[in-house]
Image 1 (cartoon, helix red, strand yellow):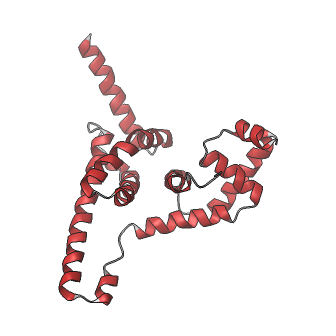
Image 2: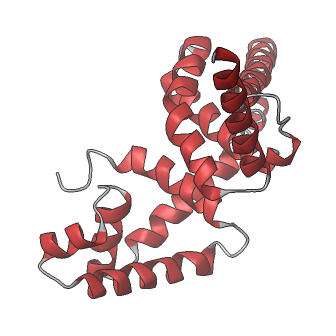
Image 3: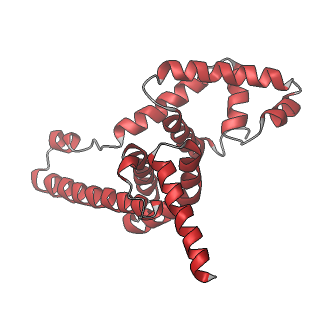
Length: 209
């Protein structure tokens, strides 16, 4: 009985890994929702800096998605993800120590500025870009998008809340994503999903205050 259960679990594990390798969006979303907080907690312990841990967590999920085809079907996605996160921390630690040593030795502002940029700058630029695009949407369109993406309301719930039809909500969401995709032509839906989640963390506590 126990052997049969282990066999079923093993088959489900391999099936899930294959879905991730093939770029299955639902599988990746499930991994993101399950492992984001544990990975963030792990990296917070390592860095002792919550903001830096968030940054490394973001990079880890993006790198996992980019390297998903190299995932071994016999390795758990969590192990692979945490391995990526740990390696990113090692790189960050080495980079930070090198930067501190150079600044301490040379005491030169120009060199300090040279080492200020980190690999996460590009990611932050994309998050800021998404925020700017959203803020430039028409008022009703922006409100509908934020209620859905940041507040987690379903289309019918938004319709009831704003006293509009569900069809209007669908049209406004379609318009919003049309505008967003115009500026993110080279990014697939999963990258936008990740960017929305990172932006949501920043927006929580701001919208509808």
